Length: 354
Image 1 (spheres, rainbow, N blue to C red):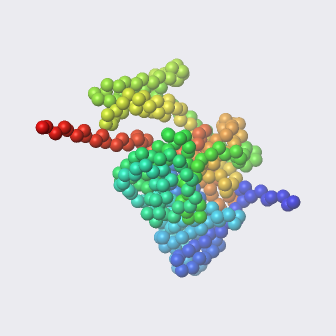
Image 2: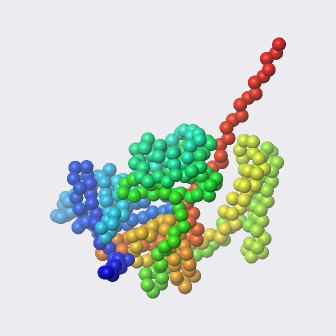
Image 3: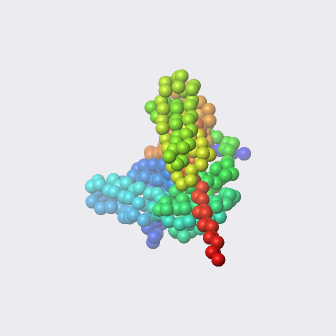
């Protein structure tokens, strides 16, 4: 059996340009490629720089907005999308900004009421209606009694539906793009993690921590004339950092105490969190993108153990492939706070007078 070749850190790229009439390999004029994504963004981006001239007087290839681009590394397709922006200077240095088709989920808005449907149903129906081709769509299970979209982008609508689903059945889903199709897949525990280690594939690392936005006491009021009052305190954080208090209000029609309690719990979890950020720059690995799980061993900064990639930027230049990762201790997915919609009560019929 042959030994697999280690490709981390080495680039063997190919870039294809499709203008609608022909597909051409334009790799030879590419000087660098940046491929990036973030768990809180709907789509991934590709930024390509090229030397697009032979004689310093004319463009060699006419790139136009709307043209399609495909990007490969070691014959693996990593990205497929359309040019949304291009620019060229007098020496023929040109830059292309390309987004995958998930970008269309952020560029259309919808106003509609959905009843007794799953997030999967909403995803498939709306994607097709707005010209986005769905790929594999996982069954989300829970039927949402009522969901109102009022000027939301398609992505915001989908995130609302997935947030409601997670609250009911605990299952988590994410929206990704592969080969030009938008997929809805369930997030499950990742057994295999790429190992990033100083002295092996980590090139640099940094870590920072801040309590500037920390609040360790919360008072939340809600209901008619603020009749409900919920207080949350983290005494351990007060003892360590001093008292930092916040006051919040919860509004809505026919607010119940249970709703205020739930909102207070959620808000306090956000406020009583110490913000930290870990970044590593490593030899590039194609499969490590936003949402991936990695295991990091970097003792100087204290970045040790399992992490999730919250954002990534892969750079391909001069035959090298490097990636800069922002890490998170939790696999947080985008969420939009949404309360279950209540159907209005039907007015009681008055008895006819005789």
